[in-house]
Picture 1: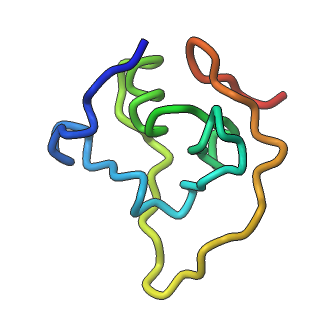
Picture 2: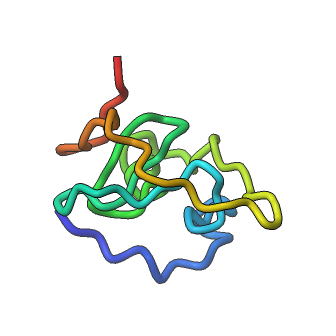
Length: 90
């Protein structure tokens, strides 16, 4: 199911913008290109959308990036794809 909620204002998302979160990552998995390091999952949609759809709550792990924080490399190979909901790593 594809949900077009990306255009929602940041206020409607609980103040969360994954692109500005230190836990957000772009993965090397073409099927699941986005991920959240804090929650240990990767997804096709924005991680905040996956969290909101699954829990009904805005993401509580959002942490603003520090000014000048470097982009991280190929981390996240251990993230689990979110198939029909997000899945935490064991």
